[in-house]
Length: 124
Picture 1 (cartoon, one colour):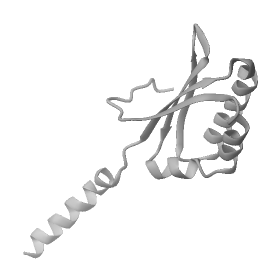
Picture 2 (cartoon, helix red, strand yellow):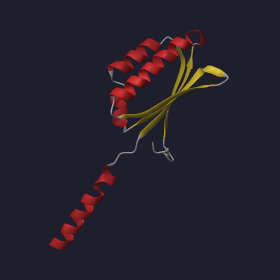
Picture 3 (tube, helix red, strand yellow):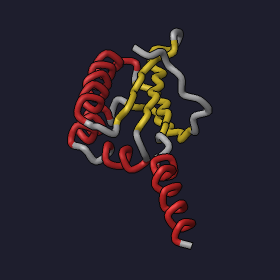
Picture 4 (cartoon, helix red, strand yellow):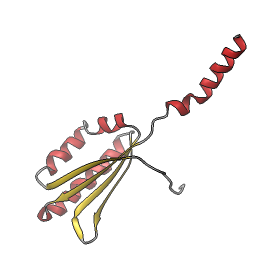
């Protein structure tokens, strides 16, 4: 019995990192910006993303793109270590500053939670 218990404890220890690992939390933000304020919005977005990635351990990746024929249609791909990392992110001073500064520039905002099928990138 002791041997079985020890074996179960060992297996639990070996598998615990896999069982406890959280899936990344991935979200897409689809934004339509007032065309007359596009340059200012892009500058604030760049600053907000750079600050978030630099200062927040739980912010893994952020990419912002715009549609070639509709530059005021912006899509942001956000990857966080966990949902709690995202929840921490939206409470930060720099995110709140971005949100308040761009509020009048944004005509439409759609937030979409997505589930990754595969994450693959080249090793640097």
